Length: 241
Image 1: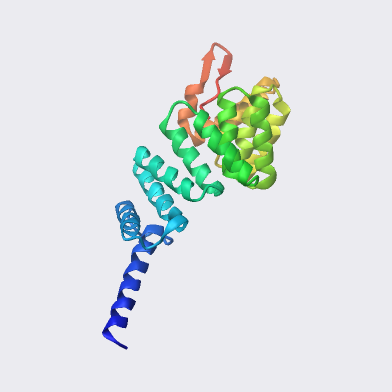
Image 2 (image 1 turned 90 degrees about the vertical axis):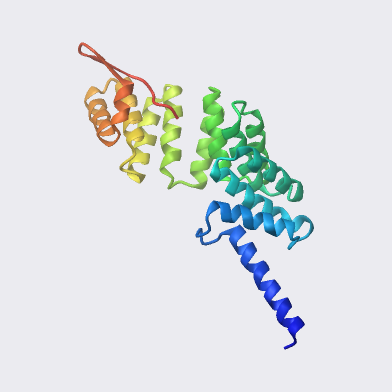
């Protein structure tokens, strides 16, 4: 093997190491190393054209994990320019937009696009359901939670949060059923116990309400802040989503 061939093999191996650090499949690279490796891969033009989208996307994920939302957003913008039909990129950019800005219109638009590209994008359905809930669009929120549950029925958070929507719609029996499913999937879900306790209370089932609220507070003492006792009467407020 000639010296030139050896040099070429060494160069290719170095490129491989840099790209692997950027992709970070095993999760062992530190965030600064991920960002550095992605930057180096882009600067060295290891990939050309649209193939570079994943380098921007992986660097964006690194920036976001470090709390650098502006740089994360810039990189997701670049990745989407290169791969405009990638639902995951729109979902990820939507998460950054939702975290970075109080105005959630742009995030909602990205979640809509992600779902349009991939109707089975459960995470985008979940995030959109949350935005609809915050906007008090409970019918739309319920529809998205129901579709997400159909696609991913073993996720406790989806059942728990849909139960919260049922509470807002005064469907207390539905809330009890959804929170029971959430508890079965995650027996240590304090919020599921609390929300089911609220539903029981509104059904005037004080025994079950008291039992569930006690279980919730035992699991998460901070939930006691949402219980107000005046004389022999207890009132319950919903904790934040």
